[in-house]
Length: 122
Image (cartoon, rainbow, N blue to C red; front, side, top):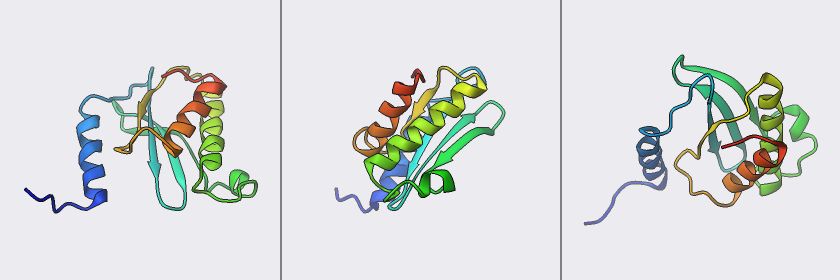
């Protein structure tokens, strides 16, 4: 059988399948990653209340000025460090990682490794 779904539709399908098991709480929020072709975005989300607690992206002025490109591994590392520092400052030490249907390599892995280096546990 031929699959007629686009690449993004398949990613959304994988993300919905993952979200059945990955749930964020106020004690352990969900670290949701979204990567576009030009930038990378990350949020800490409390799913029980439906609120975004923290957010960071490669679009922010503080990072965009220092980055050459918003869509490479260096940008992902910078965003990972930034979200981890903000999370630790707010008192969040452990999170649940939500890769957003993307495979765990490249920019997604670089962001996760940078967040772990700063001290975030997942």
